[in-house]
Amino acid sequence: MALDDEPRLGCGRSIDRIWTTVDQPPNAHEQTCGQCQAARSRLRSLREATQSLRESDVHNTDLKPRSGVKSSIMDVARAEIRRSRRILLASNGNGTTEISEQALSAVIRLAAAEVHGIHARRCRIEIASASSDSSAGDRPSGYPGLVGSHLVIGLRVAVAPDINIPRTVESLRQRIITAVPAGVGISAGTVNLTVEDLYDV
Amino acid sequence: MSEIPLQSQVITSKLVASLAARTALETPGVLRLEPTVQGFLARLGPAALQRLYNPASQDGTYRDDGVRVSINDNVALVHLDIATDIAYTALNVAEIVQQRVRENIGHTGLAVGPVDVTILAIEPPPRARVR
Image (cartoon, rainbow over all chains, first blue to last red; front, top):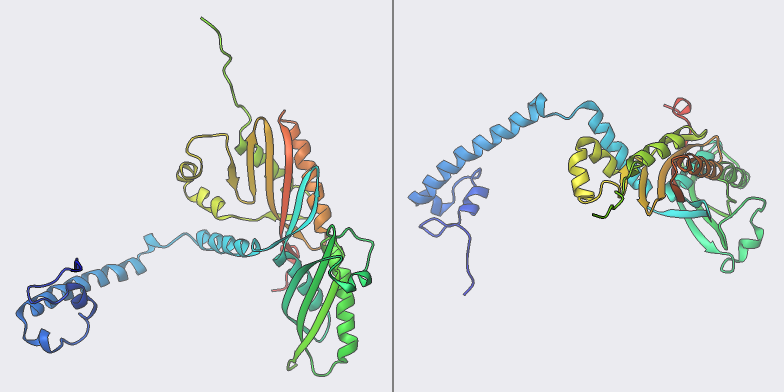
């Protein structure tokens, strides 16, 4: 027989159940059961007291965090998101240098924001080994890259309806190819762009 | 009665962390060190956090916003989380930070192990941000 640790009244009704329904009208049993009516009455008083305390805490200025605390928490939260995925840029006797995907993505988005008629949307960054990507030979050189691998950037964009799409997208590609080495210090690798939508000007 | 020399530790991981953080922040192109949950909690209750993370050793790993330092066998190991200015090349900034931190910690007499740097953000400087 399973043990039932739930506290119950003499009539067999669960006190927890009465507590959760204390704000609702009494059911048929509770309308006639003296024990349930007494319990409801006492629990209503308790509920009012706890509700009063909760509301008091909400409006108590002594319990409000200092203004700097909230912004500090948000700074930490944003930084934790940036820590999500990291890409190894360099490793030598001095130590390693990594970059978060968020930081790299920010450089690409800032570059896209400078191109008229482009709204950057989703940005994906992958690391491809040199041997696994047939387009590796096309990537620009002259910058230190990721040893034995290179970036594959996938950016989806929305464009203004009045622009020349092929010309603007090519301009965006060149902007990214310039911005990543300048801002990060590595080659942009392969830049795949997808126009997925038009936006209203 | 034999005499046993006492081991003394003058250079603590907290001191090295402070030195590394200040050096990083003085490097052109570094906007800030990125905050961590540990650093935030340390400000709220450093004693409690010390007990939580490091109950036995005062000279073990020290964590604060954007910097983590441990000293093992007189070798300092440093990790920095930084945000850099978009006007600078982040990889170059990180390499300069590594060199400067190594030089400055070396002045304490400690050997310097790897100084690992993670670039968590690349942004325009605050005054240049579009509102």
